[in-house]
Image (cartoon, rainbow, N blue to C red; front, side, top):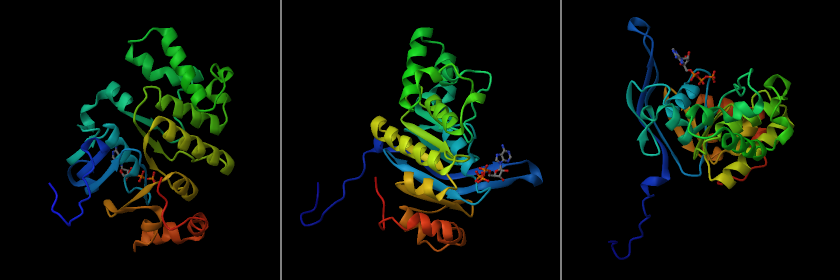
Length: 274
Ligand SMILES: Nc1ncnc2c1ncn2[C@@H]1O[C@H](COP(=O)(O)OP(=O)(O)OP(=O)(O)O)[C@@H](O)[C@H]1O
């Protein structure tokens, strides 16, 4: 019931929440060597968002992706993915809920392109080989590769093709959430632009939610609907790239206000929603 004269913003439905990180502590080391990477860190990601995590070296961005994948356990606090604790997903469950594009692709060098893409489906062991092959071929073409690339080995691929194969592999189980760790690292500017365009297309056609770690400002502006900044062991601010850039903090000033930041922000309107 609403009070006449008052306008209420309806709360987002709970299933809108894809990732919820609450009061997270991540601690490594033992005894006197113990150190906390995250302390009381909070953030959330809603369906359809493209959230970029930025922060200085060693602030725990990659560890945060591993927390969302359920590969690193919280010392305290919680990481919930699609309503369930990330640590309870298990390997198979994780692949069908969360796809991960690792830095540099991380393809299996002894496997062909098609076998790399099909890996998680084969591991699952429930589908016949021809169905797995067809599913992998669909993903191969979805990322802009041709059927004749299926038999190539990773060593024979360009950097851009490695990223595309890694993306197809991450999407083989049709996860609603995709994690990208430095997706354009090592690519030349034109390959990086093409890869960002592909990610945007796939996000629109598959309805993906994205969480990305990047140091690259062009990638950040091309792909983010929201940015979360990690500093001082927690998320210090979230918002559109333009909003975050105005937050007073030495890391942010260095990151956004340098020459590269100014160049990347120049053509943008004040905020950039999807
Ligand atoms: N398994 C581990 N055991 C011990 N320390 C770890 C482990 N994984 C990560 N760390 C430490 O946690 C900190 C954060 O690492 P992480 O790789 O997440 O940083 P990052 O923000 O991604 O940095 P970069 O931008 O340089 O890649 C680092 O000090 C790292 O050495």
